[in-house]
Image (cartoon, rainbow, N blue to C red):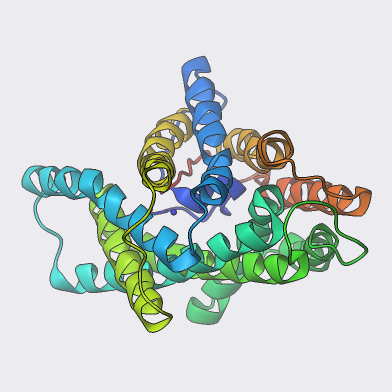
Amino acid sequence: MTPPRSSSALPTPAQHDAPAVRATAPGATDPRAVGSLLAGAAVLAWTGILVALAGTDPASTSFWRCVLALLVLGPWALAESRRHGVIPPRAVGWALVSGVLLGADFLFWTRSVLDAGAGIANVVLNVQVIALPLIAWLAGGDRVPRRLLLAAPVLLGGIALAGGLLGAGAGGPEPVRGAVLGTLAGIAYAGFLHLNRQTSRRYPRHLVTPVCLATVGAALTSGVVGVAGGGIAVALPAQTWAWLIVLALAGQVVSWVLIGRGTAGMAAGTGAALLLVHPVLSVLLGMLVLGERPTGWQAAGCALVVVTVAWVARPRADQSSMRSAPV
């Protein structure tokens, strides 16, 4: 499975590991932007597979993916600060606090992958599409779109089916628990987005710095949880380290750049629709690479989640063109 967001547009599924947004010319979609976005979504689809292949505990996986990503994000953020100045201590504090929620997201989602399978975990994470507007409503009184209220029970029903309410196939040992934890991961991620986008709105030229600070907060959160629960694994096999490195670079850096560039060149509705390739690919890759075999009911639940998210995320006719992205 984790960057700044701006705009009133609803988040999309592929935003689980990703950045912020910019305006683009209405109706103009650059083919290169489409290719970049699809490539980024395809990279994100592998994150659950990489977690499963790494095969270590959730705290260790979450901690090391953050630390390894900081080897790239840290120097990048320093270069950005030299160009645009340092953001004030208050903004630094909020970015670190948002990282606590990002760390919770990583911990819940990693456990969800191990419990329910990579495909199901990535689909269930889409609950963030509903959670973010609700958090904005509770925290700041923002209006909740009517379509969101209508979609909520349908989305939750799809999550229940995907989690194995009516029977689970070969995917993970605890599909129901995995679906619950995946839902909690989506809620935690929505909380991260809500806090992080405040920094993004105030300091739009700082694209990398808020992500870097949030990753520091996520690393500290994962580390504390890991130490409290028995420690962070260090003596890992070389193969595990290799998968963790790929996970960090793919989920925190490469996909963030690709989707960030892609969504900058298209309208929000187009980007949201194309990003739905992420959960679909996740299910297919889980079947092909890990041998996951969801039941017909689970497949129906996944389809219900994807269709509901597509309906919720589509822009209104009066909505201006905007862009979204990942961390």
